[in-house]
Length: 256
Image (cartoon, rainbow, N blue to C red; front, top):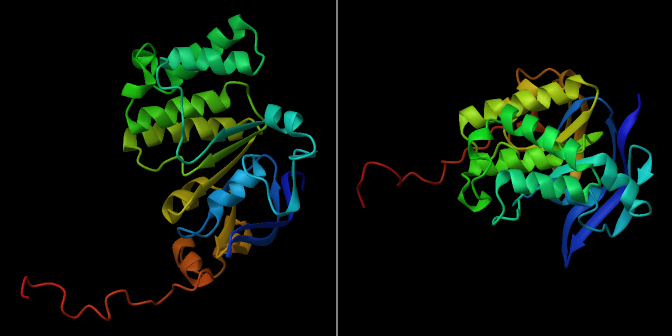
């Protein structure tokens, strides 16, 4: 199986806190891949290192055969990134932001205009294309960020919680674009802690907890004998059967 991303011995510490503890991972090309785990599992830190936004303490990362830190220009030309806590040039309109992004990517002006028009239309942003990004809603910001990440037609797309805070209509639009993108043979890697979403979208899953990979493989392989990915996930991260209310016998009823 061809790998879109190869991770070997990846470590990251913040002071005494180990965020990523020596993970090895081969992400297959042409798949919709979910990196799942509870909050604090190390998903965002891992994606930041894989995409060249954060330098690892140890280990190597290759994206479509290019080392992220030895050949960063080649890697960044082949990837699109929608990071957590998306920062945009908010005093530009949506169309101006796409035009700026396209020129940074070295695309000809006419091609940028053509692709921007198509993306704005498909992502239901055509009516807001001349509106400043600062006035966009959360869902609109996610969609214009996705448009920027897709504009140069990358081979691998990395998305950190792309559906977080997004309304159902925008989520369905984003989902349709991503399914079309992977249907063409490209690779999507996205992080999430919503198992139902991952189960409905992904071909391949890696489960992360406490900075380590607990399981990886096709959806069926990771799910195993469990009735759902949610159940398998809870067992893998050690949360299955935990009673969150056992010590809250005073809670409820309105009495003091």
